[in-house]
Image (cartoon, rainbow, N blue to C red; front, side, top):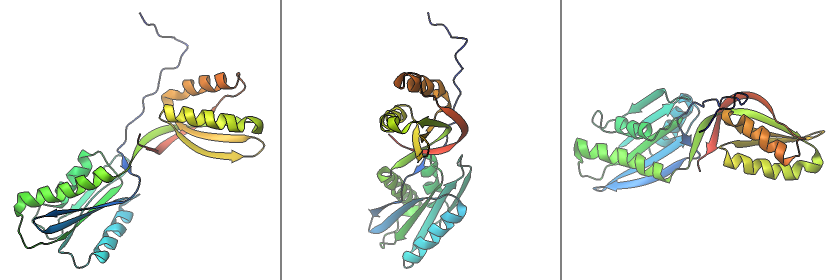
Amino acid sequence: MSTTDPDRPTPMTTRRYPDTLAAPVTRELVVKKSRFIAHLVPVRNVAEADEVIASVRRQYWDARHNCTAMVTGATGDQARSSDDGEPSGTAGIPMLEVLRRRGLTDVVAVVTRYFGGVKLGAGGLVRAYSTAVSDALDDATLLHRRELLEARVEVPHAEAGRIDNALRDWAGGHGAAFGDVVYGAAATFTLWIPPSAKTDLADDLAASSAGSLSPSFGATRIVDVPAA
């Protein structure tokens, strides 16, 4: 029967946030001779998303439609879409639903359509626009967004190389992000760790340094962590 150590801190819960893209991605889909070119771009706000949309429209000025969908905000609470001349509800909203279903934020999708001469009907348009975005997302590299705690470790220069390797290995195994290293009187390493891992980091650092090193902790912030 397991027991709880009253002297051990209770792990803190970490709020989950939508993912985002690591880099832009473009993919083309052809349906009954119509070309659907999906452009997916990570953005920081609505203004950046509008700039992306304007840029795509300039580049593909001769296309029949440049339909759009965007989700922004740390929690994905802001969304907007446009059918850009396609029948209402057949392009922007299906594109937006794909972004929502994939759990993404701070991303804009623009699907450029060159009409191939064959009408697809409302259902065909919905499938084509949603598939174009979905297929492009299959090619994308995702970043997980996590609320992480800042941890700093000051290390004598003579031990910096060994501790650097140890901390990087630790970060990879604990869902943490390795930050900047500052070299001054000592080497100062910064990690962004799950709040629930505070005790693990302190214990593992003490074990690897014969008790001579311990982390100091700062504030939490939202950090992008590469998907495994």
